[in-house]
Length: 328
Image (cartoon, rainbow, N blue to C red; front, side, top):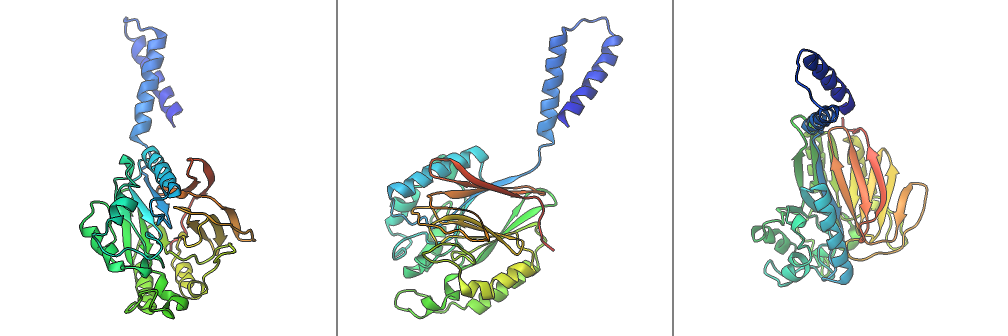
């Protein structure tokens, strides 16, 4: 497109110059034409929204957590990220005690201090968050300029251009798992009803016109890893809703791995390398999987969803692109 416009501008210039006695050096003419073409290319640049996704960041300020945070800062600056999404386990091992806990500064504010990370953070909740005070994580939204956890589950709409948008639905997956319900002294799930949340998810997806629909939950629906793996309750309950409403991607953590699986026209993204890493396994639905620290960088346009897996050294490990959305 740029080349065609440059040719048109050159033809136009020759017509003008043929009627003028003024002399311009050929190199100056070419330079002016290329400059005009470049400016035109900037004017028609495709609108895009870039953001980062990471899970299991609760590393107590460890060197590994700080290494990932530093890499996230560099990537956020490179892509001009607008926000960060977490897929839970924001605090290990037993969650956070209160909204005024000193750990907020030591393990979050001081760790993710890169200027490019001073953008909104949209967290999800994990099982380790439920070992502490989940309400404290919600209350911290009133004290922080970037922590945006307003509810245990919520939807986040992002406008890409005048007619295109992205919907990110943050689930609270711990209440779905029977194992946690059976340990009320460890996981503080009292009052949380997975059936109500599932109906809410169905309603949100039923009433959106967003081109891209991403659902985030701490626990993976599918995962190939020896430590934890697939989550039966989500396969049985959540997956049918995602398939019914044309969800593009399901993002999770829990397993401390970086993995990309593909099933049922859905990309399953696991970005659990925020502070630790474990072994992965290979199977038929695994497109990519590695034991590594890292996170995911996403750029969304009206026509494409580009997903990059990046490690703590800012090395690109894996990338994939969805060129169209299955949204109905």
